[in-house]
Length: 293
Image (cartoon, rainbow, N blue to C red; front, top):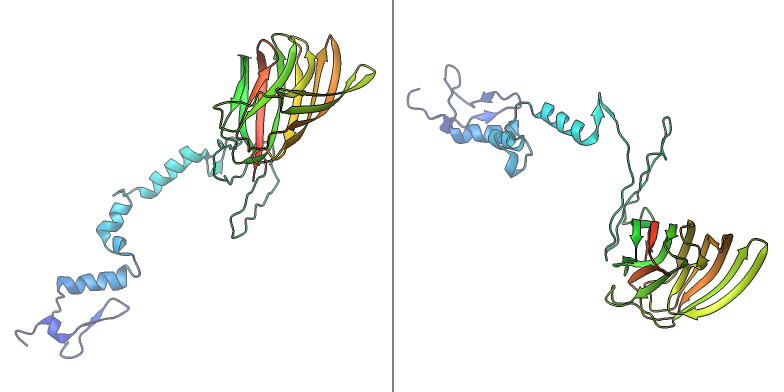
């Protein structure tokens, strides 16, 4: 039995990790070569592992050589997700994205939408799908501002502009649009408006063409708060942009409500806008939303 090499005996690895030698096995002390041990580990201890994770050293490195890896991960998750005793805490707030040329898919959450005991399921098909139509483009808190400029609107076919403001001087709230992302603005007489105004018990109508689109009209009193909301169609198209606008304010100390149809008669796609007080500055909140198309 002397001078018999173990590799010459052709050992066979069994599922139980015992190793059977076909013949003359009784009384032998079996020693495996390093290569044979490596094969046994790769084929029976780490089965199906990718090339980068088929050794104990590689597995340890993937776990950052951390013997308390599970505890470390739990601690990090608790910090990031606000976990306390296995329960997530804290508010889930609105998530918004800055506008870009590419479509953005997102879900908006509000911490008031889902209360205790309620269940909401979100199902997404196996396809690229927009989960929300209107998306927040900007929410601007203004303090004695002389204008508000919003660029980067080339991806938005519908726009909604709303808010509540006060003016330092009596005047209107108007808007001009740009076709070159804010390098210049259309100040020609390309804006048409047809309005119906209710003031006290009087209702009147008016129509006009001007060098700016009126978002809140009449002569709004200085320091008197008013609200407005305007929706525009075909903003980023090579066609006339039409919309509807309404506002509720005070003129000559009399409250008035105004509903109007607004038009920009230019036929070049728009991609930016500028909102202006008729005189002085404005203070308050303006929100701009859009639908991509």
